[in-house]
Length: 245
Image 1 (cartoon, rainbow, N blue to C red):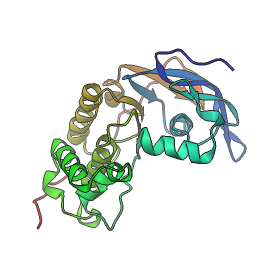
Image 2 (image 1 turned 60 degrees about the vertical axis):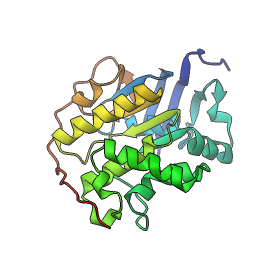
Image 3 (image 1 turned 45 degrees about the horizontal axis):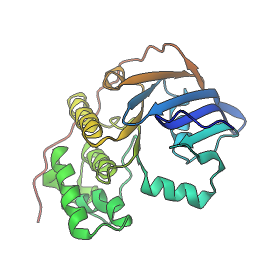
């Protein structure tokens, strides 16, 4: 077992994953440098989500190695991997997964409070990120009162608020209208660069991949040199939201 290069915050070697007997990843290797924004491109079903799940310790490959800051994730027990995901990583899903009983700022502040940050400080940080994502007016609304695009912005604020070492973003702007996608991606990439956050971004959108420092491409679970990404269809736009009491 050989340790990864010192400047790679994440490193994977020869990952093999099967789902229900079908190969999802076949021999995928890559390194992600500290502070880098890496786009993982490829069409739907190419293995992008599975790769992010392996790198973040959610899924254990049947073969291969995953390292985080020169520590082998593939040999960690379940509780150690859970602490790693809680304390060092954050995740953005293609569709927002929020706690329905909490309002927007409480959802965005939740990871901070789970890490022991005071409620006052967590609220201040969450509100700052909601403002940067243009949904500060929705801070007191619960998820059921928000549009899908607004809920996704809350989920993105939640991922940025704790300033993770690595942010994993799986098609993070899928529910957004094209104009919203551009703004949210700029906010995400600018925040990552200013705070030194490493981002691994899975996308089949060429415009999103263009904002990354580097792109690796998957096809049928394997790394390939080039994948032509199709244009993304327009989706529901967002509406302005006024602050509720």
